[in-house]
Amino acid sequence: MNLEHHFASLGEAFSSKTLIQPLHEQRLVEFNQSLATFLSIDIKSNETKRILSGEEALPSSLSMVYAGHQFGGFSPQLGDGRGVLLGEVRGQDGRLYDLHMKGAGLTPYSRRGDGRAVLRSCIREYLASEAMTALSVPSSRALALYDSREAVYRETPEAGAMLLRTAQGHIRFGHFEYFFYQGKQDELDQLIEYCLKHYYPDSLKAQSPLEDMLTEVVKRTARMVAKWQAVGFQHGVMNTDNFSFTGETIDYGPYGFMEDYEPNWVCNHSDYEGRYAFSRQPGVGLWNLNCLMRCFSKHLERDQLIAILKCYEPELQAHYDVLMMKKMGLNSVDALHELLPPLLVILAAEKMDYTVFFRILSHLEKDDFTPLLDEVVDRERLNQWLDRYLSIRLSEQSNWEQTGNLMLQTNPKFILRNYLAHEAILAAERGDYLPFRRLLNVLNTPFDEHPESSALAQRAPEWGKSLEVSCSS
Image (cartoon, rainbow, N blue to C red; front, top):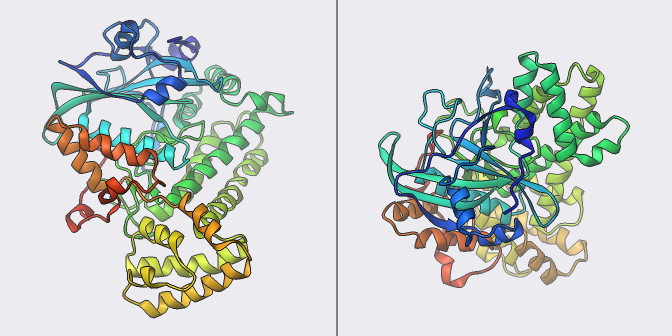
């Protein structure tokens, strides 16, 4: 494993040296071999095992410092309260990827926390990050999961765990906010140069590298949020310290995948005002970007920053339109804009399962609407919509069967339903990781049929719909 230390080279203003503090009787219980191969990491090497688990100290490992707007209020200093950056490794694509351990123990930024993670939250993040990757949503990924016999106290005592995760970068919007609001101009400039070199090297060729990089950050963020909306994913805590400068989904806490379609669904039980409700996510993405742009007010003119922000909405809308056209098997934006709004009204009124509906739609026969009509109370309203849908699909003169097959590669059969994660967690807490691995298997290839695991595609039972997740998750 060729571990590099580029972020560490920025100096003490950006981080604090921090070592992983191994858990009591910790065990490596899951390892992502395909990701390890991509990163040229050999887990069979004893030295690699010792480094990744924290048994061998890394002098260059660190915890990052940053700030952030949390639920609208600004916190001038946050940081990796339970995370340690081991360094970077180079993937087979030539890019650098961070190795970052969650639950590694106390850091200078733990505040009143214990620096630990529980098995419950580590399993949830492992499953979510791999599920999102399989759905082509930019995301951090899970490399290794460790459990232990160490008790960690939340509402009740829970099993302590650590999750080793990877991402192109763990630099957040809050990194820039930290240096900007502290008036540390030299460090802010240093961070800008670092990001240009490591994440946006193509922008260095532009006439205004910073302007070009920020435009790309805006567009990447817009595309990421568009994908969240299309797959029915809710992040739950869209604070600026949880938004990645590289446009990846990071920090999986109280997230959720849409089941019954509810535009104003709030998955985070701690989000009392619904600030980060599903329908509000696109607007919050823009709000966060506006916070980010303020950090460059001494580098670019106000009109330049506004012009950069104006790229967000058209980029998000265009990307969302393309994704939804694929989900519905349509070839034109006009057709989408005619059919999608009334469809979403029907889904909301019927409390239709978002994933199940689009999967059945992918299998729809031209002369038999029964499978979908059997899912609703108001059959007449849906039948009218389906008549219009059929008319438009046929007028586009595309091959019906071929289009349906393409839809099946866009509309997953399996998503990470909250009750499935809950059941996998309960089993793992008893020492049984088989349900976790079975679920992970279908989430890694969610468009395949997996007839042996069809039960994992079923709607949540009523008890499963009422499960709560909060920021402690």
